[in-house]
Each structure stands twice: as structure tokens, then as C-alpha cells.
Length: 244
Image (cartoon, rainbow, N blue to C red):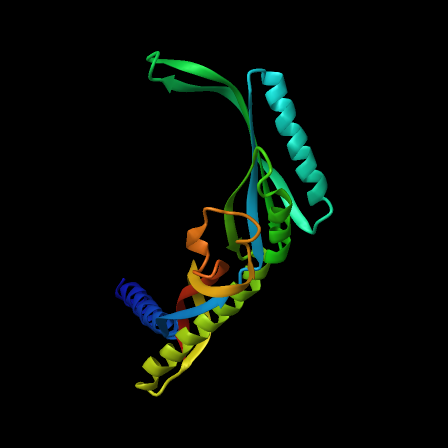
């Protein structure tokens, strides 16, 4: 009986020792890590210019109101087909327009108002200027929402490059922190990131003042030159490196 208890105790003791050894080995195999952050700030040129052409007609007859609007839009569309642009209809509605008559103290019907809006974008300002010159001042045609922006195709490689630089920035910080222990940052184990975009103003070529009077004072300088706002790209990363 004593031999059996001794044997059982030996097995338990051996198992405990092995467990401690394997536990220590397992802990030893887990790499030491360091977590740091990195940033990158750059800009992306705005390669697209866009404008919205809005056709608005008013008539007592609903059919005639729609007919006049669609005819004018068809004229605009035919011209746009000869230009290097992208276009899409963004609004099409027809409704009864009313206003308050102070003398009669009641709402009176003015007619049926039809509105059709077409958004036009191009790769350069000159094309948009040409379109505005063609239709500025025409009856029932209004120009609005002049803007410049960076296309997703142009923005993607710039963001990817900025992301890589942000990771390297994080690695540099990790190396600096690990150097105090005589170590350096090794393999990248994990990374997460976030991006933000903003505007940096710079003058651009092209003058739209002679093409049309637009309510876009915020995007034109004192000389009447359109102001291009570069896209400000900011990437921040949180990275975890192995310490070697």
C-alpha cells in the first residue's frame, strides 16, 4: 500500500514539474512586443471639377412645363456628348408652385414648375468653363454647386503610400523605445489605421468669371480665379511590433 502511494506521489510530482517546465517554455516562446503609433500627412491634387446645370420652367400647363424643361435638357445633353465629361441627372420633379398674395390674403397658384438638374464633371477646369460659356445666361438655365474634388482613383495610391509611411513612422518610434533595452523592433504583428481628409487652398489656373456669374465666392479669389483646394490626407496607425 505504501509503495502504491509512493508511486502515485512520484507521478504527481513528476507531472507537476513537467507542467512547470512546459509552462515556462510556453511563456518563453511568446514574443515580447511593443505598441506605438505613427502618422503621415500629405496632400492629393483635386483632379476633377464639377458643376450642376439646373433647368427650371414654369407654365400653367403641366404638360408644357415638362416639355419645355425636357427640351432644354436634351439640348444640354447633346452638347455635353461632344465634350470629355461625365454626366448624370440628379433631380427631376414637377409640382404646383404657389405664393402668398398679400392683397387677397390667400395662396395663389402660379403654375406648374418643373426642375431637372444635371451634374457634370470633367478632368479640367477649362472644359467646365466651356460648358458654362455655352449655357450661361440662357432662359431657364441656372449654374450652381461649382466644386473641385479628388477622384477615388487618384486618392487611393496616395492614401496607400501615406499608410506605409505611417507604419514606418511607428517603427522608428518603436526602435527608439526598444533601444534603451538594447533591442530593436522586429516583425510587424498587428496594425490598425484611420484616415481623414481636409482642404488646403491654393490658386489654380482658369478663370470662370467671364463664363458666368456664380454664387461660389468661397471658391474664387479676389481676381475671380477659381481656387483649387487640395485634399489634405492624414493617416494615423496603431502598430504592434515584435522586440528582438
